[in-house]
Length: 487
Image (tube, rainbow, N blue to C red):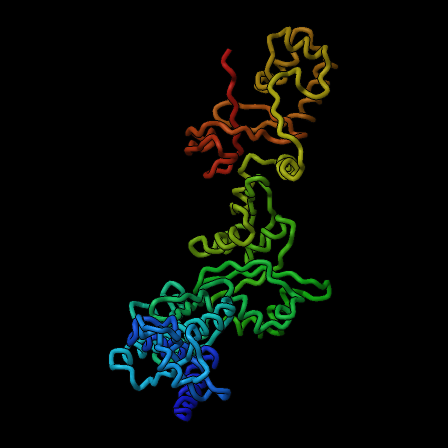
């Protein structure tokens, strides 16, 4: 039996890839299962191996008694003395059991236990081997297809390549070589399941690590990858060293490195661009290959920006079905609206106000709104008295008046008129809104007070707008809302 035992262990270790200690544990569990099937319990079963682990024995541990009630766990003193002349009542003896005495049902139970143990051991050992490989590239061969899912031969195990993780550019046939990324490893009732993917952005990351040594050794870092599988991928990179161009390192001499990545992705377009902590620069880069003339930050809190491009660059910036700007939004994590120079010029943003909009949201200044003429910074009591004497309490009333009407106010001198005009030009910015016009302190920030969401019409183009909008989605005009408290 020792020769057969040694051969069985060798086959399990070599062919199944099971650790020898696990094989011995499986043999022990198998014998105990047969013992339990024959005797009803295995609590007193003892399995031992010889020093070379080539033979196994099973024993029944029995207590020596004077009067046996349970022959499975007890033995008479007289019978025990025949086995060991020095034993006494209360001692325990190990009595060897011949496995060949087990009946057919016990042997069948042992076989089932052995098969289940082998499956569990294989599953556990393979899970331990592959669980740390999630995110790594693996190569297998097309085995079969079912409902669009491809089953891949990975050697020790079978991988599943779900349809949703397959690029629309790619098709595979019988015995095709498939390079994919291990997306997930999970145990199932039927065994270990290795889920493969070629659409995950990390698949592009791993391919680039193989093709670009600077990425592999961390000289160049990948900041972020966004992807529309089969169509376009954008990769933002940066370098730890000033003398290493991150984009050039990824592209390679005459584009040889990036072309290798493109071939692996079956011709999918790839944009390599430089990451920059300045959102204006990064947004400009993210919209590549389009050339952006200007980037205006509309709302830093809401991460909203406007990119201005030449007319001939507009379709390139937007991309087919909006793909380029959509990927740029995800890459920069900003909401980017693209306008042509002509559209931008038609917006209610002069050169000064465009700069003001950028400065307003780049400074950490508290939000403040003013409406009373007395709140204007630098205004004198004399001017306040003149304005109030003519019934002008609100700044919006003052802004709605023509210069001639202001100059004709009772008590208004040329010096007072000039001083008032200077204060208004210096401190106030006029923003068209629906339905009224309000004055906002330009030296600080626009109000961020939230109102209940209602629908209005844009005063410029008539499109439907809501109270939480800062610009009209159709014509781009600046919007602001204000309500008077009821007295």
